[in-house]
Length: 113
Length: 109
Image (tube, rainbow over all chains, first blue to last red; front, side):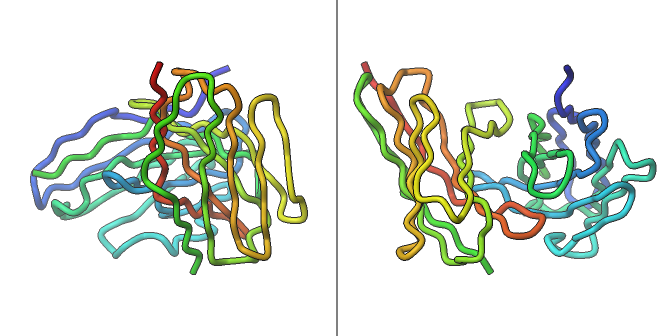
């Protein structure tokens, strides 16, 4: 079946602009996660959704970052007033629940010029 | 919070065994995982071990967990060129995965 998909695969934007990154989880997966991977580093947790609600957003670096999952399926990560330091690969994962295997998407590479 | 460390690079000859090491600080991690990341591809879960286990074997993969020393290792037997990738260990005791910095494995003929 289809895995986790993320769009766009690449996004180049200018400093100060607003961007939206989309994640389509595996059908039926109730848990959805966003991670950020900077060059040469491991992924860092941003936010976790269980259903429609954000169960843990402790990894969001500041209030420029926001994520939604209005219908408990697709999620959008929104970044306002982008900065060059936001450049990274943003990874989405989904799972059937707590402690269950997280299946990762291919990521969106964000470059802020 | 949890801190997970790995050596950055490992180079092995095809057919030899590879051992990738990981140390972590938070002993409350319930599960410990090994992920593989190939260029341009998403993270792939290779194997995992529950914190009350010492060892787990899965075909060519052997995971060893030393809870006293907070040390986790992944042994790949008969390493192949297709095993060249970055390997991440990760732990979790809540909802999030805490990843190490990754070990780049290079397999040469």
